[in-house]
Each structure stands twice: as structure tokens, then as C-alpha cells.
Image (cartoon, rainbow, N blue to C red; front, side):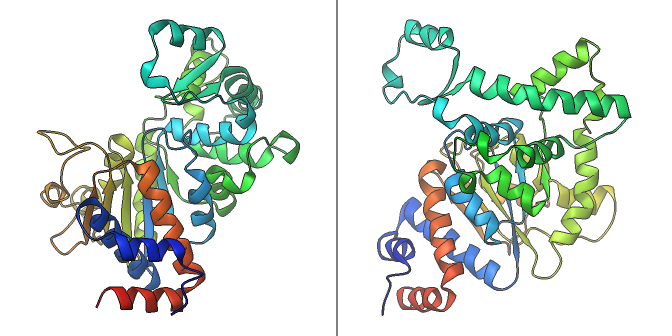
Amino acid sequence: MSTANLPVLELVLRNYKNFNARATRDALLAYWRHIESGGKMFWSVAGAMSSAQLGITLAPAIRAGLIHGMSVTGANLEESLFRLVAHHGYKDFPDYRYFTKQHDTKILEDRMRRVTDTSIPEDEAFRAVEKFIVPMWTEATANGDRYFWHEYFYSLVQKVGPEQYEGKPEECWLLAAAKANLPIVVPGYEDSTFGNIFASHVKLGECNASIAKSGIEYMAAFYDQYKELSSGEGIGFFQIGGGIAGDFPICVVPSIKYDLQEPVKPWAYFCQISDSTTSYGSYSGATPNEKITWDKLTEETPMFVVESDATIVVPLILSALLECKQHPAEANALIAAHTK
């Protein structure tokens, strides 16, 4: 059997037999079966995945129809744009583990903001984007317009011209999502650089806080989005990390059921990738079983937990899924050969 078109899928099938590797393989195969049967997948992205350049595989996956909706932190939303317009200004610090306070003070003085082993350039990223988005806020204030937080960024990323690109546009997940008008929620967007910048303009009386729709309005809109996305074979939930990016959207199912008192399909699949291990009261590390008690998942839901670094695991899963999408017959034959 020729596997030239499926190198990543073959790698996973041949080598990922036990422990976190097996969980990765099983989550990948269940994801593919769900998509191939006509199902959809919703992604929750916490952490600093955009700064870690997850868009390299996330953007193609959106374009390929492997991702149908997203919940992201405000930081991930804006940092995808930063990578597009300020990529050359980023500086990496592979020896960050050995830094002193003086090293980090020097980074601050150089007008950089460190995110683990890389850094966001203040002037090329924050200040450059600020020049474009603040006029959008002031115009909305003047006109009495109101938009969801991501709508400002969807509009902005499509207004940015190729002459302003430093990163590769095909690797910008925000651009791919905006072009697809992907359903997206950004809970807790106030906790982001541009959430802070927006708050400062509100405080100074230059913008009206109401021009940015609230998290409550996000959930109210998400009720209808979920009903549409879950039609047919249903929609799964693929979660990176924990926190509000994951907890907010997964609650839509019990809220529709108990608060709206309307019929609703449960999530059709669940996978969480996190390097947080299970501990008492830890949402990031809690097993999926706990979500059954909140009526977010059911005992029939395919559930997977991969306790590993998402920056390692997700590119593998997405690369394999992209191979499956491009060569479905070959992929299914290879999967059958390795799962007898």
C-alpha cells in the first residue's frame, strides 16, 4: 500500500500505541470518522497558541472544513493578527528558563513582551494595530453601532493589505476564519491587551463601552449558532487548555436544555489537550466524566484526554487530518490496515 500522501497519519498509526500517544491516535481517528460522516467540530483555544504559531496548521484546517466554529481568548484573537503584521519584530528566547529578573527587565526596556520563549514587539504589534482599530471604535461610538469583539478583528484583518504582511497570510488563522465568517465566541475578551486599550478609551470618554457586545450577548447568540451547527450528525468539542475559552461554550448545551427549556443535541465528541494533570477542583485537569454530571457530555460521547503540550500534539493531529481530507480513500484503507 502506497502511503506517500499520508506520512503523518502513518507515523501516528505505526507508533502511537499506548499512553498519551494512544489517546492522541484515538482522538484523531474519532475526529476523522465524525467529520467523514458529515459531523462538525468546534474548537476551544486557550493559552498563547497564536504566539506559538499554531496558525501554521490551524488556518489550513479552517480552510479545509475541519473546523466549524471556535471559542478563543481575546489574547489568541489579537495575537494571530500580531503574527501577520509584526512577525519580523518577534524575538525568540530559547534560554528563557535561565533568565534572571535583570534579563526580563532588559526585554521590557527593549519594548518587548515575553510569552515563554518568544516575545511580542510593542511598537510593531500593539501600537501598529492600535492605529487601525481605535478609529473603528470611535466611528462605532459616533454612529451608535454595536459589534461583537471578534467582528472588529474580522473586519480589521481583512482590511490589512498585503503590503503590511510580515507573516504568511496562509498561516493566519484569524484571516482564514474571517474569510469563512466562522462562528466564533470570545468570552472574557476584557482580559487581553486590546481589551485593556479599549477600557482606557472608555475611561477617557473617547469610546462608549456599549459598542462592544457583552459576553452575555455572545451566549445568547451562541444558542442559535449551536442549534445550527449541531444539526445532522452533530458537532464535537475539541479543547486546548482550560479556563473560560473552554468552559463558556461547552455550557451552551445544558443552558439550552435547562434555562431555555428547549430540546438540544449533546456534544457529539470531546477531546481535551492540556499539560495540566487531574487535581482537586481543577477544570483544566478534570476528566470528561465530570462533565457528564453537568449534562455537557453523555456516557455515549467519545471522550479523549491527552495530557501533553498542545504545541506538539495539535500540529500532528491537524496535519494527519488534512492528509485524510485530501486523500480520504487512501486514509481509510491505511486506518483499516492498522486497526484490525
